[in-house]
Image (tube, rainbow, N blue to C red; front, side, top):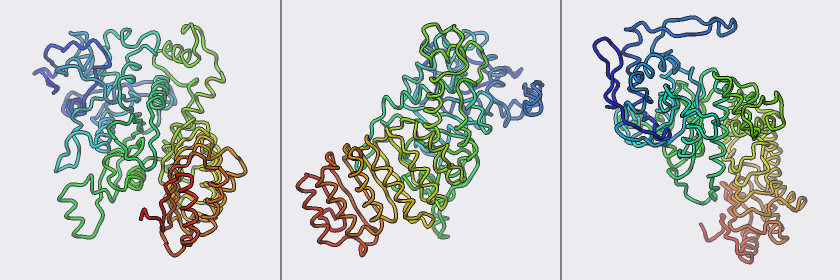
Length: 544
């Protein structure tokens, strides 16, 4: 039943549909999407499919019919040639034709219909691989996604009775119901970034961010993360590239071959995802591996997040935009004409841009695109946590200054690593430590860096100056270089003077033990910690 079949006259044919009245239970599996892709590959050329496209890249506004290939068929084309053709006699959703039973939403997918279906499937395959969903194929290294269902509006909604699923009030629509059921979300970013200009995509991003914030649990630095339980919101785009070093996604034969030749494990990918936290496939060095696999994300797409503007976004149906804007404005009458400008739009644009740009910070840094605009956008995101590996030569003093300016005051967890970076200066590291000391809501802090002792001293000095930052800090982890006596003395003073009243754990390490604070200073620090019931972990502590 799950496979798409064809009759002798090449028309799509199905058995009687399975009635699934709740649209949120009409999600689609990766294999079912591959069946759609395979059907396109088999019949697109054979049947000489054509599709509507704008001439001259849309500059003329003139549409024309052009020949299609399997690589250019998009969801607009598929809706016409597969979805509607298959469902016309039944007047049901596409998923109801191919499902044996209800398929509850696991992940909600926000995307633009104009991206090629082949790109869309490649993105979901990479998501399945990154999240290690289902069973892994020994030959290809791909996971099959078994047990996960993706909610995609074109397949889930009944195209013959859209008013039932796409309701007058977007907050009561099938989109909202699917988001409420999902355990995670994805935004598929097309190669041109058109997704950032669509009003429904903006609404979906807004709802997914609200869901993520409402369900987010800030996990202490020392805690183990259960990847299966966390609500995740990821961003994927189709991009062919090769990444090295991840044996977790290589086949056994490939691992043996590379090991024999003394090489890392090159993995060819057709999509890249910036994920909400580390993934199962990132293995035992998640922060490093995560930054490596995200390195292929195109910087121009990351930069486009800065231009997201809900009031100028487009909609296929004009009334949809009116209703969505009025939802943002919390208007009682969704039919009223929304204003062209509003402080509500401005605040929401800033929040959406900030939440989108922060996961893409490394990409922007590597492309030398970090600036004050990026910092301002990120600082207004209201984000609760920021975990990122900035071990890149592109992260120097200027980039550190912009990053320090970008810390949202709402942060409760900050985890950054930029150690062994010859581009970083002592001044750049100090920017980061001082900015962290000013965060009044911060609970968990981990910095892995060089230039340790000066930065730690400045951190403690700022705590003394502000009398506000540090009051909620429960866990501090400074893994640095040159953690000299001055750093230990500064921490002793900060604890004794009550600048860290909530502190429970203090970790302070130096990868060069010869430059670590003296045993005498460490002993005094340990005594102060014991008095305040703080667990101390460091080079001279019993912990090691």
